[in-house]
Image (cartoon, rainbow, N blue to C red):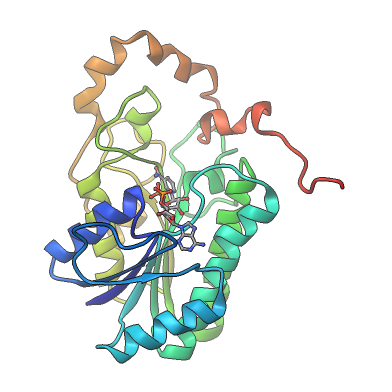
Length: 272
Ligand SMILES: NC(=O)c1ccc[n+]([C@@H]2O[C@H](COP(=O)([O-])OP(=O)(O)OC[C@H]3O[C@@H](n4cnc5c(N)ncnc54)[C@H](O)[C@@H]3O)[C@@H](O)[C@H]2O)c1
């Protein structure tokens, strides 16, 4: 499959691009950054919030061999101002969706976040059918992007999978990560499944490994073909032995962890 990966120079993007190439995909990278050394495949340096720049990328990508799907990772991966979050997550998604429609590209996999539902209590396993409960403007941006995907699926019949990613890391480092970890290999498995799933329509899946202590339900992902192989539990002994592990208990009432604390409160829009 020929795939455009946005945010290709980032931490998930760089792992994913080489992983998708290993799985036989033809990968085109897009990022604000210039092409990283050693990248194999086509590269575009562009801002996903700029519709003219993105249209030019799609013209070139489609013209040079077609385009089957987009994996949209580009975005600020942490809390920012509300306007910046909306631009980074909602506007970029809208720009890509419009370009997809204009160029006949019918599938997108999106890097959403657990923070779209961060204020959900940790009482039970969280499924794909719960109401949005963002814990930050970052989470609001992810909810908005998911809603936009849904709109384009319903109105235009494209396929869109929103992956609510937990903690993408080489290995878990804290007690929270024992529940939220997404390994590098499982991230590649997950996005590969998003690309290959038959008729996903609009789907929400959780981007975590097969963690024994998972807070999020892996069933929707498994139904789509995402079969995670790693489990953070293998690292539990070492993590439990560290004093830092206790800090994770302080903010453990909600799945969003410390993002739900007042430390993250700020005005939605600053006054002049
Ligand atoms: N890393 C995680 O654990 C995690 C968890 C949940 C969700 N996510 C989401 O996954 C995505 C990737 O996260 P990451 O950890 O790789 O972040 P990252 O910051 O390492 O990479 C993001 C990349 O996107 C690029 N970028 C940002 N805005 C752009 C724009 N407007 N146009 C083009 N390129 C742009 C940046 O230059 C960067 O290379 C983000 O959307 C993030 O919110 C990540």
